[in-house]
Length: 372
Image (cartoon, rainbow, N blue to C red; front, side, top):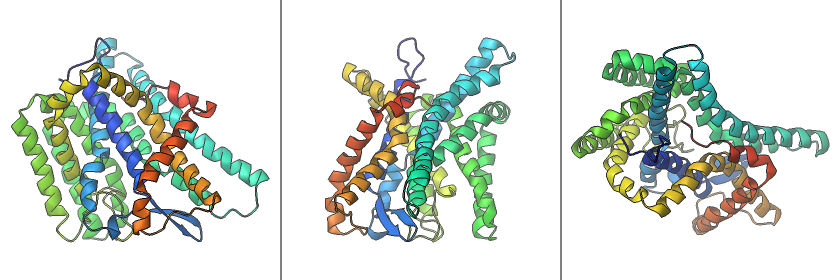
């Protein structure tokens, strides 16, 4: 098992993975978003379809599998700990849910409340015709998609642990097979609606993979490398069949997305990334033990979720402010768009930091940011 910090039961490496995965998503959204205005308002695009080879970055930076993997381990550990303390008595499930959901729902409620307040105020006192507002608010709230899936996995985590205890590796194999069958029904038999099952099956499989963390952590470096290579190999094969896109994020030029709904490719990506984070774990843990690294990790772990929940607001306000000043970001990935990338790494960061200092975001900062 990973080394724990003090007596708190915290595992610094897993905290680092959790914070890192959220912050990588934030930086990706800031730097690689292309805003295209259409009749109904702003639409989000990215440069992947127009830039040769850029899809390769998504194999490293689409790190949601790491987040769900860590969540699976933490949820199983929390459930087993509560169950042991209360010896299976009443209230275990309620206590488990209260501890997990409070940390998720309070910050999300702040973000949703602000969006609702803006919509109501504009409707009551603003111009009668603001055709782009609903679309803009939708974009701002769209990063919360993963929170809905994550909350569902929290709700069924005790059932998942129960099944894990009775099926072990066989349960994981069944889940992978179910994902493959859903893709088969979707792409070969044109049963489109069944693809929505993969929102739960794909992320549930990665979450279930986290139940094996202790065994995986104890395995050899060769085993970790083999897992990474197996994931990379399966991902390479799948994305060269002419069926799945190579990008692990949605690309407007592609007819389908590997993320919405997720496909079998995300499981290959998960195996690749999980193998890699296990392989580098000893090296990273040695550096996390340094006092300066501990302070940075403490800050990152406290702020990762608030930053994630507010980063789209920071981007939107920065983008809107520039438009009010008469400065328009290019809507295509020209050299001018690329030249602006440093600005879009800094400006939304400044605005987001200012937002987090406002009273409306205090709840997100006081609420523990760990999703375990």
